[in-house]
Image (cartoon, rainbow, N blue to C red; front, side):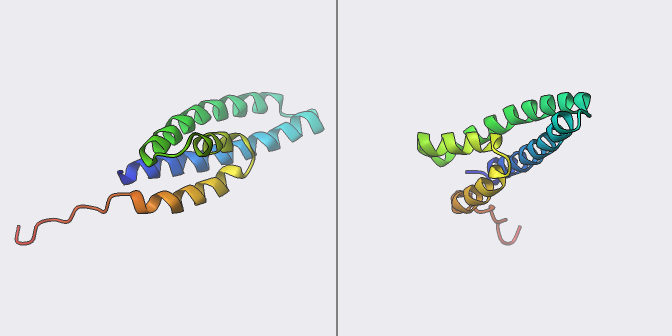
Length: 110
């Protein structure tokens, strides 16, 4: 497995998690203080688009790492639970890291 598969998953996990936290904060302002309705709409749409990209990258990683359906489902759903993606990403990275191909070395004397 190439390192880029893990890297793009990790980036999207963090981006999705941060956007979900921003969405939660904007919803507090929208429903708690009756402010920021437009911001909440924009943030929710951006999070939705980024979550779709996250799903694609997580699914690709899961297929290459040969995860069970239950594990894959948990990783996919973690992008919808505030702060869960941070913890799941750490666990996934630690598990998948040994599967990542070592970088190829250049031939000696070239």
